[in-house]
Image 1 (cartoon, rainbow, N blue to C red):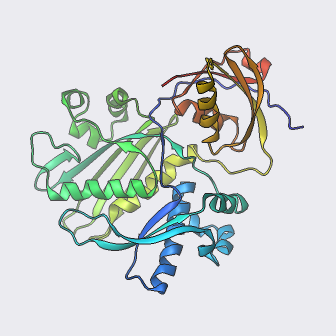
Image 2: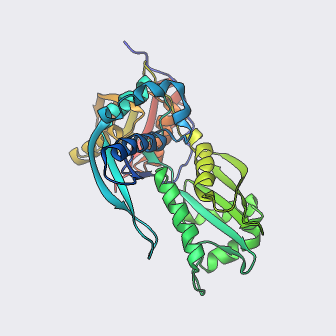
Image 3: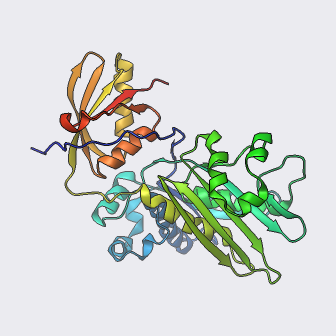
Length: 357
């Protein structure tokens, strides 16, 4: 019998903007044409794109344990087709190959190769983007209040949006309304003043915030830095790109690689069984909703009904990523509220109340 882990997890408050990210098992990559050679290359690139989204690591393809699985990438394909890749307004659309992969086969690949997993229930971030332009000065990208948005600014925002979507990371921009203007100035954001960015971000109830700044030198080189706060930690790093290089993709890759480390786990061959008690389950509809919520979580390997008493449902849950990740994922879902007390360490139960929609 698997042992019950007796532990106490402080039930900290996490906001409920986490999102179930769709399309994690599908990739869309540019191709030169619709020949068999282009399709074969596209499938390999799409599989790499999917694995990057699922693991939260842009360099996952450098992992030696994964190379043997790329001898026949077509073995993982569920559906395939050609369609144009969305482009900026007025730009020539590029041909693309869209590949959907079999979830069970990809999950097995990840388990066998012992790759990290970034669950689909992902934190949502508030993003402040500041550009220092030689002609126009400093300004927030995405702030279209009272001024005409330049095509260059639109291109920057589109590049950021595309890079975040390729990584499967939910985000939102500030409203840039009067409250934002009073809370955080452009110069304060440019200086990456975390002591000011943090309180200005609180109104959005996001799971974390990101501040990204950049400027272009006289030689065309782009230089910038990003700062984020997430899961109780802050991280700062800089980036640069030569003239003509795609700076936003590399900047977002380094950013996401760093911030997702707190949310990933390595699938274990042996799982740990936890008792999870949920109160407020007073109808069959809520019972079904609770089970559906648990089954959506990648950290949950299996679950069984342990006990039902009144409106309290107790589940025996096999978890792969550890109790802390399960606890965080449940709170981020917005459907469960932590009810843990000091007695939790004695009872061996994680306790929550169900939050109805």
